[in-house]
Image (cartoon, rainbow, N blue to C red; front, top):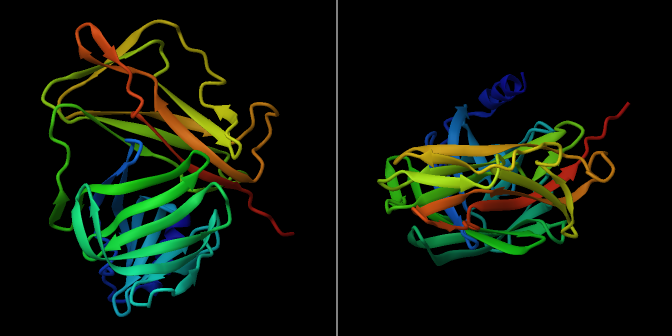
Amino acid sequence: MRKQIFIAAAVLFAGNAAASEFLPLNVGDVANYVGNAGATRDIAVDDSAGSWRHVTAFPLMGTSWLSSEPTDSRVYAYNEDTGATVVLADFARNVGSRFSLALGGCNNSATIGAKNLSLSVPAGTFQRVTRLDFGRTCADAGLISAWFAPNVGLVKWSESNIAGTKDYALQNARIGATTIGQAPVAEGVRVSALLPGPRVLNNVTPRVSASLKIENTGTQAQTFTCPSTQQFEITLRDAAGEVVNTWSAPRRFAQIVTTFSIAPGASKEVGGEIDLISLATNAPLDVGSYTIAIELRCQIEQQATAFLPVPPYSAQGPIFVDRRITHF
């Protein structure tokens, strides 16, 4: 029902809109980003409604609806909580132009910080890059900056969490009919994460999900060995870094060695849902900033007798727990 209402609104809003030069939005587009800690994230455009495009795991908003205005390079975001649209950015404006963001969470504004930059990332070197700088209401969460290249879109972003600043840079992408960068083709494993959006209403969504997608990019099967029947762990930490909940807490696992294999070109997803509650009180989490992390608890078998730990096979991101207020 919620999507049907949105589509009706989207049709009324739609004209002959086309994608902004700085944020192409073609259904089927997908981009892979690598972080400075080795984790990867994927962003994809998987649906449309009028001029709107459904974008998965977009920084700042998580999975969301975006639209662009071809006449003046404006990019809009749809706030599902209020049913309103806000201007995310107007790339035609001058450096210093500021936009208010009524999206909730830890970011309340975006400012055009710089234009006509040259930026090198794993996918290549891009010219005429525009950087957006974001105002934050949380000291240890939220988007810091994002860089956009013409005809490519988002090529880099920086975000804050309790562990410090994390950067993600474009590794490869498919934008329309164009391929940018090169996907990993060497022997090995590629892992990408799907994390919840940065803002969650715990009295509307009492639990969130996190998962890792493990892809075998090589030509030989990859075998993973797990010290128990637990293949992964999801952890929620508060702003002070203290663990407030774990996925494994209400579960029991057999302490026996288990294995799984991934064939060449195949993939496996691991993950689950974690309740937005405190283990100490069994009550819903207080409003505030948290970090959610998912970690693979298994090791990859590199040789017949050698097992190496794989700390890069994990991902974490900020999450702001809020609560919807009901007016009587």
